[in-house]
Length: 366
Image (cartoon, rainbow, N blue to C red; front, top):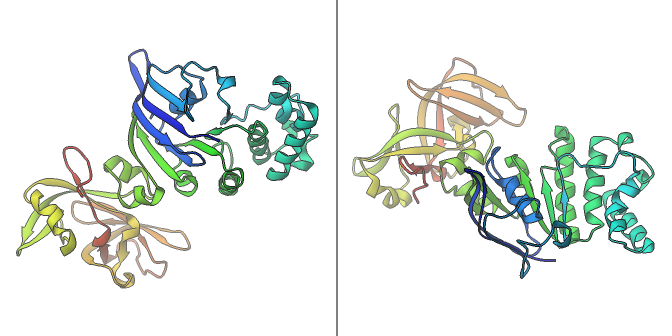
């Protein structure tokens, strides 16, 4: 088992900077998820580690070994691709064993590893089948099994669940998380799906335009996003953003959102007082925007008069699109809400969970 370190790693394709000065240390046995939109540099970061792309600048270490010039086959890593890349003419057994045969691993050892991995993944009864006889979920397990038999120091996974349907993705997420705990190996996982990142990662590295935006535990990134991009990318539905100004009202610090003014909780007023008179971005998540009739107890709330534009009943909650004279935002309401399209209603923001971002830099003000 081994740690992984990206030290000032940059990758350029001509004039395009795909990864820009990436500095990340991934301790042994951690499950790190690179997440971000398309063309953000997450897959390139993984391919650089695998040796499938050459580093333009900087160094990559696996454990204490510098691997910049080490061929992929000698890096002691195993990779699971989005397409699974199974050989169609081979059985499941032969697909899983192929890499070991190339390394001239003894037959007995190959047999032990394949059957042990198949047992872990629940595919023992599929070893004689060929890929075309398998479902998407079964193929995904075979691809993971092929990586497990290698017994590598580091597992790399590049969007391995993207070809599965929604129900299978949920099951596969849990299986991969359990597999990480069982194997006790370093996992590095790439996805564009923030739900996968939040549910699977020990830590999440959020990327945009080749730059690392924030790296921390899922809960810290959700509770304390470093900037507007991270705040909007993590969480579903996305955080509400409203252009606003910090003002002083009756001696207290408040946020002027044009259509309404929100008083800042006393314990956070000192943080924002230096910004009085400045334009900012006010952020509040839909789950912190409540039907005033069903506001959770014990929160510092600010009530606002709105109108219901659209409702989406989800069973356990109701997503409500709300409008004021100049603004639109979302709420995630208690299913008991009586909100109906066209209704005027009072909503309550949980001001303990508010976010303020600098208008110019889009960085969080803390």
